[in-house]
Image 1: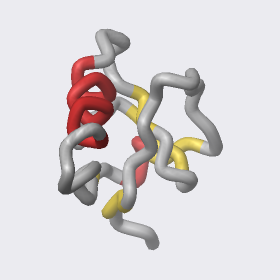
Image 2: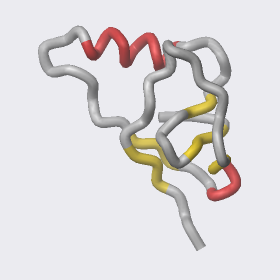
Image 3: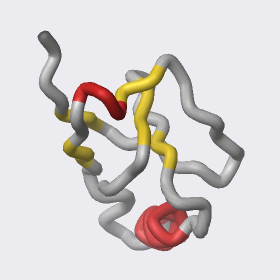
Image 4: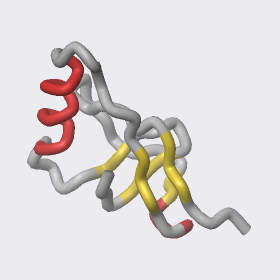
Length: 67
């Protein structure tokens, strides 16, 4: 999952168009359900918190280097 910033709770800051959230909402209606979502991030992209709305779908796992 792409994103500009992420928090450790799985919230994602995108570009504000809602494309991925809309796609994931459609996936949840499919019999197989929501796919397992992974984001790759640089350590600098990890924030204490990012703004979210009720339409935002959290990411299952965020991979980043933690030194």
